[in-house]
Amino acid sequence: MDDFEKAKRLEHLFYIMRKQRMPGHSHVPQEFKMRDMMMLDSIKQALDNAKDGLVKMSEISTLFRITPAAASQMVREYERKGWIRRVILDSDRRSVYCELTDEANELLKQNEECMMQGVVDFIHYLGEEDSDALIRILEKAKAYGPIFDHRPKGRE
Picture 1 (cartoon, rainbow, N blue to C red):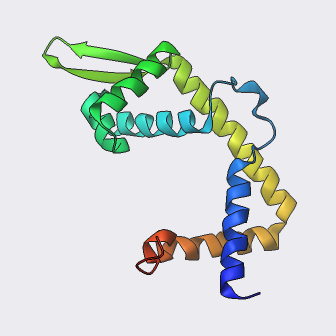
Picture 2 (picture 1 turned 180 degrees about the vertical axis):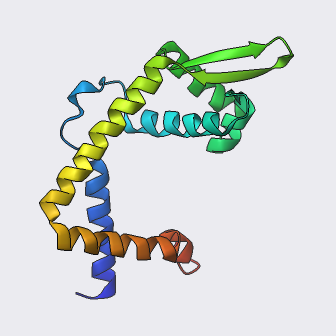
């Protein structure tokens, strides 16, 4: 198999793996998608790093590299679902802050537990030798950097 065929095969496998859902997500509500989990987890990390436990809407916009209008729309959707609360401080009436609700924190916790169990099951399926090899290969891939940043010009 030549390099181009290997690249096509890897690309296809990455695509298939992204589309597959791990079994056992039944306790997580259907409307809680991978995108939601990733967005809320990123917001949670920003909140954990914030000195006051709140994150500004402008920081959410910057975090996700989206426009303020898109950030507002995302927060509105999560607010409607009961996952985010907007907060306006008496000391700063011009800025809008956000915090995660207890429901969002619980969903994130459940989802993480489910995902971790899925990874543990996958490790058992691979066996010790193959799981160690996969970790070694992924660590090497991470050291290489973002795969698509290394494409020659004109192949974007």
